[in-house]
Length: 174
Image (cartoon, rainbow, N blue to C red; front, top):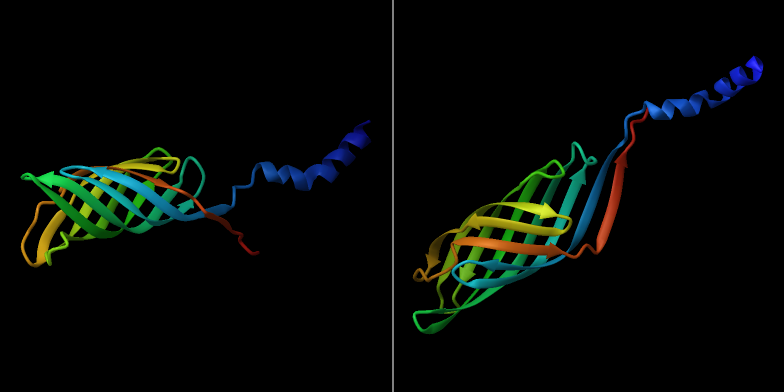
């Protein structure tokens, strides 16, 4: 009986080492279009693409993403209808599975009357699955024409429809 137990231990020794090995580092890359809405001075609809890189598992994960898209706002300002369209390109970073997201975006806005504003928008938010809720402040300056009313402080919600998911792992060669 002792001989069989010893034989079993010797044969299963290589598989016992799996319990003490550290998990290999994996990176999950998700890409897809997003739709969103921002509330502020005007309600703004937005659409674009986002690419996310997530490293690690639950405890020590980090996520970084880049996004770019277009947006359009319709609103009533001083008894007239205002139309504002724009482009955004930015990135955000999240540390941990339940941490806050910190982001920054470059913005270009126009009122379709030869007036253009250029600026940046720092933001902070929370991401739950593929829904990203954020708030921030747009710092805009005229680059051509006159200043026009835009949303400065905003609250936004954006949902990413993941169409491509890729898992990469780094194995250490010995």
